[in-house]
Image (tube, rainbow over all chains, first blue to last red; front, side, top):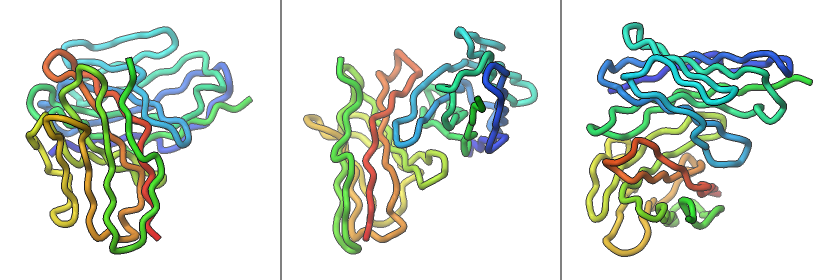
Length: 113
Length: 114
């Protein structure tokens, strides 16, 4: 089955700097890659997603890239702000086959003042 | 449009009791997924249901756990004879199904087994 690896597990960046979180997946059939943000005690919230027919997607300060050949995908957050502090999960799914989402273990992002 | 609803938000059970967790999907969503999150860990898929059907239960423990999504009413995740290791946050998510990839999560039920 699908396995998603995520790193780093913890990331501290100065406010205003960029943060990058990287993930790999094992099943080449995976075709949908969502990213979720989870604040302490709250539900995971979908912040951006990418499908396998697209290499890059951007939404304001957040961008995601996908390299299907290498089975890598990454989240980039620019101009980080204190409210970006949270745990971020990458995930992979095979849309229209299983549909279940396989999550990475998460990255705890700290934005330093 | 109300989001995904889960209740109760917090549930305390003694070892050996039953836990019943409920999930009402977003309006118009017919697909429900249950995930378990242990403290300081990621979310682990448990089961995927459509109305009256279990589509994929590959993540469900073989014993004590069951799930249903009846024609009327919420989806139920049932844990019989709970043990301390069942303490976790249980999240459900819903999606419209064939028209959309996205899954939207409920607020979770935090189960504590004493």
